[in-house]
Every structure is written in C-alpha cells, then in structure tokens.
Length: 251
Length: 321
Image (cartoon, rainbow over all chains, first blue to last red; front, side, top):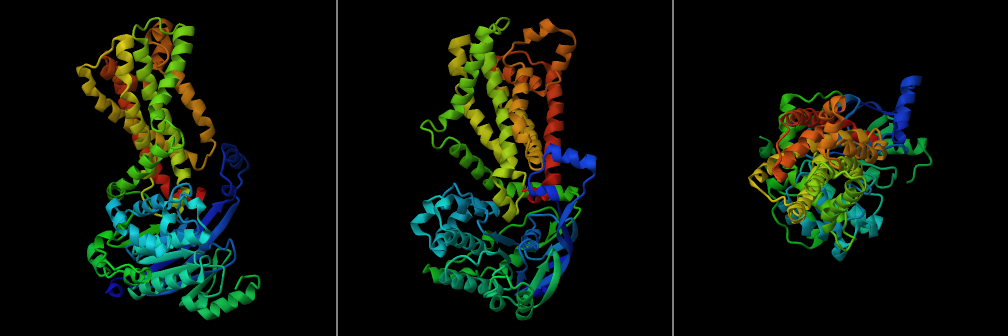
C-alpha cells in the first residue's frame, strides 16, 4: 500500500553541508570580526553532492572513516539539520535518529528522560505514560529506571534509547553507531525488532565504523569518503572494498 | 489522508517486542504514532531544502506544531523550576526569597544609605514591584540564552519546533515570578500601607504584555547565544545596567530633578512603560500613557522580532552546537 504511494522512503538529492572551520569551537565576536577583516572563508566540507535513495523495506548501511560525514548525513535525513545545498525528501511520516547518548539529560533519572524524549517526539504525556512500562521492560532496566542516567553503563543507555525509539513506531529508523555497544543478547533482540519494522514496510539506515555484522544486516551499503559518495552497492561488495581500502577499520 | 496512512501501520512492531519482554502485547493505535514536524510538509512527505523561507502556510503549520508540543514545553519548564534549587533545603521557596533578598539589599544601599527613598513616600512598594518585575525579565533573558545549549542533545537527535525551548524558559521564570509576587502585599501593606484595590484587575494584562516582551527577548538571547557564546558573559552586566537605568531603585522624582534630555531619553526604556503598568495595577498609580504606548511598540518590535528571528535561524542551530 505504502509502496504504491511513494516508491522510496528517502530521496537524497545533491546534498551538501559545509561547516565554517571556526565552528569547531564556538565562534566569538572576536573571530567573527577577524573573519570580516581578513576575509577568511575557510570552510570544512562535511558533505558534498550526496545523492541516493532508500527503498521501503530496505536497510541501508553507512560506512566511512571518522569525519567522513556519516553523522551529518543522518542528521540531515532526520531533519534536525538543514543542508546548505540540495534537498532531502523523506516520505515516511516519521523517523527517529539514534546516536550514542541519544538526547538524554544525564543528570535526570531514566524515568524523566523517557518522558522528555517521548514528549520531544511530540507525544502527549498520557501516550508516554501508556508506553512507559513496555519501554522499561524492553530495555531490561528494572529498578534502575529511577536512577540518574549518569549512573548507567553505556549498554544500559543504548538499550533505553533503542527501546524508546522502537516503541515510538517510526517509519524510518536511523541508527548512528548504537549497535556496537550492548551485549550479544540485546543485539539479537534489537535486530529482531528492526526486521519487524522492515517487515511492516519501514526503512532503516545504520551508520557504523565497526564492520562486523553490517553485511548480514544491510541490503545495500553507502561508503562515504570525505563527504562524498565513494561507492554504493550490495552490502558484501562495498564492505569488502571499504575493508581493503582502510585496513584500520575495525571488523 | 495522513491518518489513513498511519492506520495501515497499526499492527505494531511491538508484537514481537512485547513477546520478547514477556509482556502481553497491547494494541497501539494510530494516535500514538509520531506526529510530523517542521516547516514544509504535506501528507506524510517532508522536504528539506537548503533555502527554506518560512511562508504564511509554513507559519500556520509552525504554530500548530507549537501547540502539539505544548506538553513538552511545560514538562521541561516544571522540571527546571524544581531542579534549579532541588538540592537546597528551602527548594522552591528560593524563587520567592531571591528577589526579596535582592530588594532588601537595594533598600539598604540605595534607599537608606544613599537616601533614594526621599521623593517616594511608598518606597518599599515601589522598589519591590520594580525588582520583582525586572527580575522576571532578567531571568527570562538568561534562561533563554541557556535553553538551547542546555538541550543540545535533544536538538541534535529529535525534530521539534525549536521555539518551544525559549518558550519553556519563559514559562519557568514566569511561574517563578508569579510565586514571588504572592508575597507582595504581605510586605507592602504593613510597610507602606499599600493595599490591593480594583486596579489589581489590570495585573493579568500587565503580566501578559510583559510575558510577550520577555519571550521576544528570550528568543533573541537564545538565537544569539548559539553563534556567540560570549553573550552569556555579557548578560549579567547588561541586565545590571538596564536595572540601574530603569525606575526601580530610584524614584521618578529623581529623574524630574534632572529634567531635559535625560528625562526624555529615559522614557525610551521599554521597562519604563511596563513598570508604570505594573504600578498602576499593584499600587494604584496613574499610568504614564506615553511610556505605556512606547512599551507596547517595544513589545511588538522585540517580541515579534525575537520570535521571527529565532524561527528563521532554527534550521541552522544544530551545526553550531
């Protein structure tokens, strides 16, 4: 049904993102003044002319070295960041982006963070309350839900983040390096949940610099190199090519 | 049509999840699905392009989204309100105590030592109304500037109308202000013989006008604090200067004695009209209509401008974080 309406889940068309170099640190009046005076226009290209499409029911992998633009690309697709050029069409009603430490306030308890996250996604409080028990149970947090997030292990944080995302029933799930942490049991469970989402006609994008498991999980893989598309094709072939080009990439 | 599409998807991915967690699967209705956000969207399709100028329909959509996210703003505001003094033994009482102590210090220094109370028979009522109201503006500016940076992790990951953050900062400080003002007559009635009268009916209007003004200011500080972190260092000095330039710690007669250009320029201060409005409501003073009209114009300019400028730039916020 959905496929008839809109053939692709995501259509990325000539997307470019540039950061000004001083933006690495926060810019100050002084730097801005200096830039005006010296006419410094040094920019860092995070993404340049990136185009691709993701079909419904597809898992697209995203590989590349650190700083290749993987996170930036996912942010543009999640539409939390506006590109400098090009366009992104996301046909799903909804998407969630998941990064390590995902949108949590580490001073607050897990409970408050579940609410904060759900409400930030635009749910009503009653709706979050209804999902709450299922979210905590799936994340296997138990009593720890009332402790502040800063006391959690990284595995617990990503379990909670993943649990929230999947319970929000997104059409499109964007994962940024989240599957590398967490134990084997939870990885299996999360992959089952992703398969279910795909079975419903959703779409998934997974960015990771850890290559193990990517080939089985993904249908196709996009290889980013310094903000450009180096290769796009069947998962096995692209991952092998990337592995050969960057022997340092963790497997 | 949008909902129709969502309904296709109601058999949740949760069936398997709940089973795995040992929980009885429950139906999840289309209502619990994520809503759509952003500027340009129609029927489940959202497009993001490089140059997105908010159109009129975009604005209507934006306002609708603000309403949809209202519970988020409220939750954030109440959480911060409680968290701010959570580890102190007096907790929420500090929202009341802080401006009171501030007023007591000003009373001691400017009222008694420097003799500022001369020329103002109800100096304590004058000072307290001024300090309470000004403190609302000052804290709204500071919280507004912090609102984006404090929630950077949410901003990066989740899409929601960003204006909710400065709105939430103003709600937080506004509730604190309302809490502080409850003690006003408890102090000024015995001290200055100022009792509540019919003019008190104007208070909601004064608070409303002041809140719109503060929201605009918070919009400006929030938007400027992202590319220019220096704002946070400047803020205490700016608010202090503004406090001294406003009729709070000195009576109006002080200005009348100066006369001429100083008196004319002083009225340009938006605080002048806002405070005059408050003092009409709280003390039964005459409203300075000229200053009041100017304050209305300032509210339109700063309030409207701050909101517009913020929304125009919100698409670029994440890259500066």
